[in-house]
Every structure is written in C-alpha cells, then in structure tokens.
Length: 199
Length: 269
Image (cartoon, helix red, strand yellow):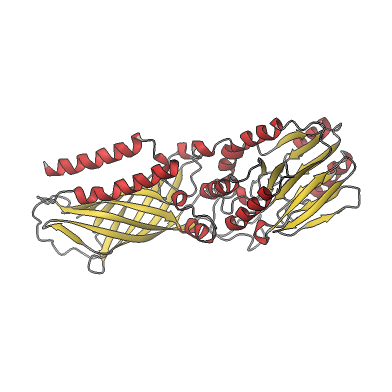
C-alpha cells in the first residue's frame, strides 16, 4: 500500500511541469564575467540535505549545469546535524518549447557529496588497521527529473527561473538493487524538488 | 498574475505531498537516522513473538544463525527461502553486520528481505552496523544492543562486543551480571558478533571473555565477523566457540538444542 502511494506521488509530480504557463519577454543577456555564477540553486531533499543551497555555472551551450552546494539535515532527523557539501551536475536532455518564453526539459545528472561527520572519514582513524575500511564520507547520487523554465517579464536580479523535481537515488542503493534478487526500486528512489534562479 | 498562479500550483502540490503524510518519499541524506514508523521496534515485536511461542518443556528446538549479510540481499533472500522451506526451525538469530556503511537504507533493505521470513528473528549489532549513524538506526529498529531471552529453559545473552567502531569497551559487567543471574538455566548461549580471538579483543579482554564463558558454564559462544565457519573448543576449557560464514557464501548454521547435546550443522544452500 505504502509502495503504491509512493508510485502515485511520483507520477503526480512530473505532469505539473507541463501545466505551467509561459511568461513574457527577456532582456538581452549581458556578457558575464567567467567567474560570476550563472545561477543560485535551492533544493529540498534529494539526499544532499534537508535543504541545500548553492551557486552554479552553465556550460556546454547551457545544456549542462554544475552547482556547488551546501546542505544540512536538522537534528530531529537523527542524533546530530548533518552537513553535506555537494558538486551537482545536471544535463538537459531535450528542450520542449511549450511557448515562446516557457520550456520544459527532462534532466538527468549526478552529484558527489562529502559529509564530514564524526563517524565517517576519508582515511580510517588510527585505531583501525591500515586498509580495514575504505572512505565512508563520500557518496554519489543519480538524478532523473523534469524542469520548467520561465523567464521574468522584468529582469531585476534574476532573468529567469527553473522549477524542477527529480527522482533520486544514492549510487550505492542502485548497486544494491542491481545485485538483489527482488526489485526494491520503490524503496531506493526518493524525490527532490528545487529552484534555479538565473542571473 | 500568471506567476502567482504558477507559484500557487507548486505550493498546492507541495502541500498535498506533505498533507498525505508522504514525508517518506523525500530523503535528506544516506547518513540520516530518521527511521520511519513502519520500521521502528521490529526487535521488540520479534522478541515478543518468540516468547509467545510457549516453548517450555520442548524436547528439543532448533534455531538458525545468519551473519554478515552486509549488502548480499540476493543471498540473504535465498537463505530466507531456505529456512522457510524447513518446518523445524523455531527462530533465527542474525549475528551482526546487517548493514555495510551503516546507512538507514541498508537497514531498510535488510528488513524488507527478512520480512519474508515466516519465523521471528533476533539481531546483534556488528562492527559495520556502527558506521556512519548506524548505531542510532539500530537502536530505533532493533532496540537494546545488550539483552537476554529465556527460551525452553535456556538462556540466550545477546551482547554488543564491538570495540573499534563503537569507540568504547563492551560492557563486560553487564555480561557477567546476566550470566550470574541466569546461572540456573539448563543451557547458556552467548551471542555476539566478534569472536574473542579476533584482533578487536586485546589480550586482557580476550582473557576476561573466555574466563566468563568458562566460569558460568556457557555451552556455546556464537559469533560471525570472520566470514568463515568455525567450530572448536578454542581455549581447551570445555567451552565451544562457533562462528558462522558470511551470507554471501550462501551458508548459515542450524543449532539443534537437545536434552543432552547441542548439534551444530553448517547449511550450504
């Protein structure tokens, strides 16, 4: 029952993007200095924090976006606050132009996160024999989703914004599921939602 | 106006997601220890189920021991099928390392696989189960790391003997107190993940452990961790030590407890 509800919710989130309406006009973008970020990103969930925020750059003819993010999980989701630093890469697979100033794109991507917690480490503490464990404070996530982009009528700080939702899994979970006999897809996948605000 | 409409739609969908109690479709970190309600207190439920079996006076009983399943969910599933196909096993003890990185998701996947078992199972905590925030997850799902169960006039002491990952010395006082209290039971079993002859025990701890087993006439000291089957009177003092192979090797052990003897059988499946 719980699994079915989870599946229905995933299915509900995706079509919302296609229900959005286009906005009007866009100012001609000024040439930006290379080091200035193109985008501010805010994300809820997705295994990189309860909330995470970051700055990003567009590249490869704006098909790709790389974000550097900080996320945290508050104390009530465990015994201690979890801090996470992430590099997230997102690729727009195709752009569906719903109208002149509004488009929807399927997106896929991956991220690498670092969690500098007390019980996780890059190299094992001295009390362990050498090579006893590999690093356990770094992990990768895989994402597949949909984003809606619409442009603001008047550009003040931001010219346009994306709203996106993604189905996400930690790469280890994907590996576990691949080698398991039973399919645990509805346990290993979760949802993330977020916005990109473009300068 | 249109922007407001768009924002409203998203707020509506977000509200819908939260109002339907679907927080479980959002996950914040593999290290988060926020165990979902449906996974909480599994250990207590299983313990109650075993106690409800009303076993006093059985001529003999059998229990299976799994160990070190880590992320071998396929092999674990096969072990569950194998145990289910037998009708003579009363319960299963999973002797530690039920997770690998200590992720909450690993515990969930473990339980989803074990949930197909037709008989109850008990657990002990292993060294891998401590990693990341695994200790918190373990507590929420399986309860105390040290506990006892009395079954058919036998005492089972399930004890946390992880040194390095827990950053503490195991509670030898608790172990001794419980062995002392249960001295009158017909047979005594101590179940803990790491055998005393492993490197995590220093010489002093090894001596202390083996002395307790000997002093309180423990019939069998049950372990995992070493990823191979072992059964011997390791210290030549009348106490038998047994370790179970890792689940990835498709092997578990059945212990048959009879009036006059204890039979150990490594099962390949």
